[in-house]
Amino acid sequence: MYLTSRLLSIAIIALSYLLTVQVINFLNLKRLGRFSCAGDYPFVSVLVPARNEERNIEKCIESLLKQDYPQYEIIVLDDESIDETWQILARLAKGKENFHLIKGNPLPPGWIGKCWACHQLSQKAQGKFLLFVDADTVHKPSMLRSVVDAASFYQADLLSGIPHEKVETLSELLTVPLITWGIFAALPLPLAFALPWPGLSITIGQLLLFKRDSYERIDGHNAVKDQVCEDMALGRLVKAKGFRWRLVDAGEVTQCRMYTSLSEAVNGLSKTIFGALNYRIVLIILFSLLLGLMFCFPPLLLLRSATTDLPPFLIRRAFVAVSLAFVSWRIANFRFRQPRSATFLYPLISALSVFIFLRSMLLTVRGKARWKGRILAIRKVNW
Image (tube, rainbow, N blue to C red; front, side, top):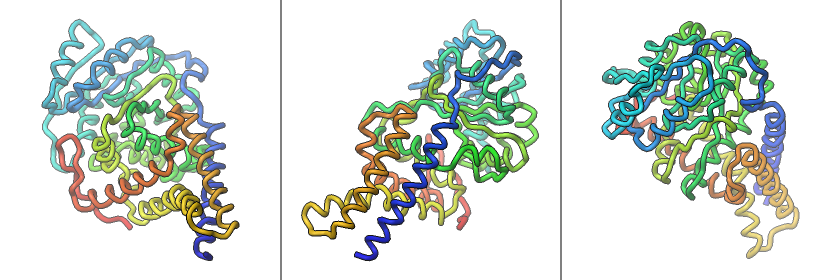
């Protein structure tokens, strides 16, 4: 009973800290579309890497072509797709002067596919700003203007936006809310903005706006060419070089549907989670233990109390932990417009997340991680 009591106390302390961080971030994470007008709108290159994206690419490009921004270009790179991606893009490009379509070169040794695609795109770009967006994103006409407004307000060298992550199936419901909850609870944004430590950053690859000269001074995607989680690596590099990084809520102007099946979601998250933690084994094990302790252990203890006599003080502590966890998930799901049912399913989401965390570590270390038909590089163990 002593050990159970101590574990519940740790869970309550951790949840109280996370709730404090979430409240701070709720008040400080600004939404795109609510910044003052920049006044000066320089030429922007919108860069889209696409590999086997026949399911998403048309909606993405059509939304980018409808931007109300005064001067911009769209460049899409087809990264050796084997589906109908190229044919769809060729049809969309007809008669569009600001839409450029290129075929990617073969992947060189030592490069991750997305990094190589983005590097090639940056070399073709003409803009003063480079906006990288994923092919599974869809944007309102005001998106580009809103992103530049925010970058101007913050004087940011790198601005990253959190899209609205769409959830339409049970598979997505059991996986996607972990991403938005994790972003919201990971670190207090005012502290991350104020301190120069590279580890205090969260960068979302679905929407990345760089000042071109800052991008070139950090050597762009070439500097992170072997990183699976290249967005996080770029954010850390920007801060390490003394440049300004900022994070915003892009949910009102950009949405994304990352996965449509459970296997796709598990494989996709397994590809990136270990990299997001900078390939640190102790961190991923610690986070897995904390997720289980905070979100799985207290509900299981309450269920057990229905059939087993437990001391009342243990039941009270378990109830407090479950209540704090419920509020934590509700705040994140409310802010990022995730279904209400995700709040009630948080123990299942967390249990599946622990499995994904450990799977990500094992697959990466063993060189078994794959994405879109390519085997990802074996990573050196980093304790």
